[in-house]
Image (tube, rainbow over all chains, first blue to last red; front, side, top):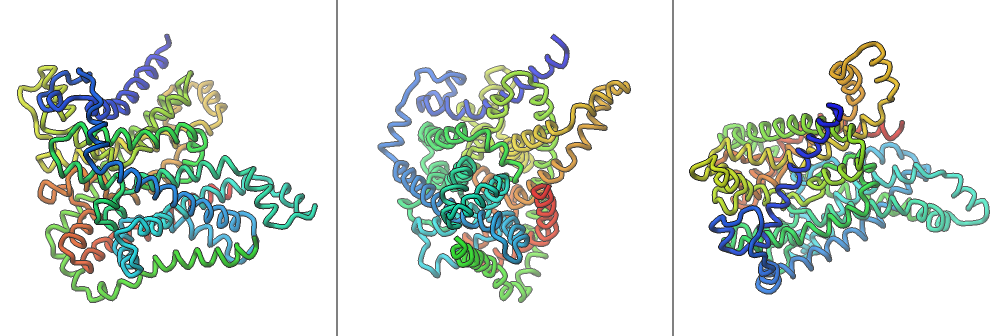
Length: 273
Length: 275
């Protein structure tokens, strides 16, 4: 083999290890007994291999409740985001109105403003609305970062589609709404699905707002609940790891589905988090 | 559609502005300057500024270096490139809370829970476990590593896309002219990636200097104030000490950085979109 091929194989192996070892460590701990973890027995492979951490997590903790809250939040936020982003993305990409370019930059700037700057004022607004301590606070606050991001993505997707198809439809007597719903949206479906999955992932992983806006242990989402488990009950390492695995799997599954589109959308700057 | 666009859109903007207005509405407390002066004389706050900069600069520098390496490796991968690209992107889509938690256990002082202690003890390289995160330097290194691990795949994939858009003829011409691999990298690859490198660096700088999750979950700013950064300190002051005005002031200190960087990034990204 040529030297560069050898170097590439070594590089791939090294990066593969860097990425996979932490995942493997967490996953393997989720199948170990308390004694294996506590006394560092059989550190590389769980032996005996047990499911007790998963059943314990499901039956003894509030994790199922947190999971439910996370699912509800992510689904509602994704739905809100997709509707608003499609409309606003369409408006910027297709409608002629004064200040269109500045709207595009405004969306981008809104996306770049970090949540760490907004959490205190947002908390006050939500408290005045009486939305804190319920999932409503998340339904209202998450779109502040998902909508600008998804709109930005969709503007790109819409602009890339030929406008002639819609014009042809309108010449044939379709209204603008029909042209949007029957022509543009079906064509842009891959982009819309990708942006919806982004919105879902961003909501699913969000931590700061969820930590601040909700105090009730029955209403919190998974990331906040995990944090409670870390600093709370120190004896259930395995359950904590099991919870991490359960939380990661759905996002990884969704991601495998859109990996290609996602890599293309990356250039739009998806490093928030 | 026109109606929805014309009514719905300004409404959506108004909702947005209402959020930004709230931030602007805050100077009532801020203009009083008391919080401002207090923070300027506060040793903890000085530590926070220093920590935030160390955390951000170290993470971003590591990500650029590793990202370039990752892109080179993937660029030369002749089979299953998409598979490896997907695999290496995994950290980037995983929840930051889980990443922080994972690295907390990787560095844990107890062998059975801490990966490094387990492996090093097992290999006989250590005689007793090290409490990696108990020292200020160790804790800072740990949060930087966690942040780096989460972020470098994004850099790698972005650079890879940049490399793939560099025309192959440039390399061929350079080879014909007798340029070695190192010179081709220096004179063709790096200049070709300039745009991507600038955009990813600026974007990541903005989000890293405001990072909350990794530091909060891994160290809570400790030991002492060794890893306290803007966002975590702002949270501490606002929600634990209940000093809202001061908490907001802490985050306002970052605003000048954002005012300088955000228009720059936007210009680059908008230009890219226009092209």
